[in-house]
Length: 597
Image (cartoon, rainbow, N blue to C red):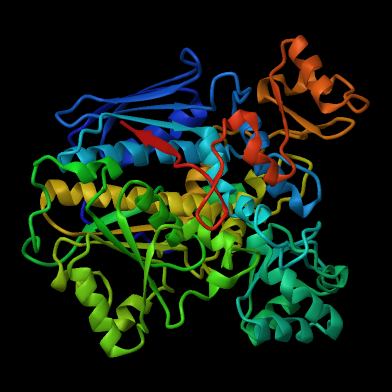
């Protein structure tokens, strides 16, 4: 295992005391991240009043945050009910064709990270003269954010480009070893399967669902592909990958991840070169009329992102008021046309990029690299998720841009953060496979399998925004630029932290058989709250309409909610009080995951 890069001990909250209390699923994430950022966090876990988590700062600059599961009277009272209502169960279940709960506390984890984001944004805003004293976040909005791409596609003008049907990785070798396969190159895909003597028609039919699995959360490719790998040894499969340029990653267990875990924080901060900021970064003057746009109003973020992780991080910064300028290749981002579309623009692309400006440039050309450097000289943040080493190769690494702007916050969102030896390609499903997430998201009795919902890309984007906000706060307090790094590996460690802690206590890291399994009704599904699941399962609801089944459980004092199976229904779902709306292109859009006052 590679050692974490040695960095200066920069922690933006070193002077801050905090109090954290509330349900452990959310408060644990908040407390852990605040402590890693340098705060002294007094932590008291357990239900508080209406189940809210409260974080209060006791500092010259102070901001508080209140987090809840959902709106009052919505029936969303815990992780299970939030996953059910927001469509997380529906998307995660697409691989099998039935809604399924994530055994890991995904919505709570995302909510905890969002709460820390809000606190950091509030402190950045205060340091710039904005009056921000309180943050509110909720798990239901975190869940909606997590499914925002799938929701946008469900409400688009046209149908999906790939079939929504059960199926997908992982694959199994002749020895029974589960593994993930990854390649972004159709020729490598074809070469891998040809080496294994796969029928040509199956190779052709399999590529499109495999390619689109990031977008659809399923991959209904021909069953013969699974049959081929089950007839080949793992050694033969590895040879085929080596010869073709594809990559294979055997699914690791949580116990294996626990044994190698290095205890590193999910992000790192390092001061960049230069003797001081190009311009003052902390004026303490009133922010002025534009401050109504959010605590980052007046700041500029340059984003050179692809797929989900970096674009989502920049999208969140834009929600907080920053002006976001995307750096796109000549002709524009090809994903703009990815179906399904709304008003001719990819609905999924809009979910991550609406409201951003765009500048086209060829970063391989020296003139455009100079142009990008000039833009960075007037920016506050440069954010990218290029392949490892590409920025340095182009002369666009942190130290390069710091010469033009010593006050720049340079942010990299990657896959592995150089913490794993012989790491495979740093994509969502490969990181899930390598870190034991495939075990964490499925209960006992189910084979480990990474979720085809892009769990880590989304959570990695949240970590990226969190890291940028911490970097901005460091800049405000030190007057210097900073490089911030975050990764999908860090996101995986945050998500699996409770399971890894159970291993440390000598307990089974996986949840019991049947955990968060929705209950069928005559016309739909119901998800009971975790604490009431056993009692709810004792009732036969299969002959009752969903509304009557829900009323029956409520009459017995059991908390439960209906499972959203069609994401287009979220537009008018009373549990979210009209939160889902349509943007200027007619694409479904979810609200900001927090409010700051």
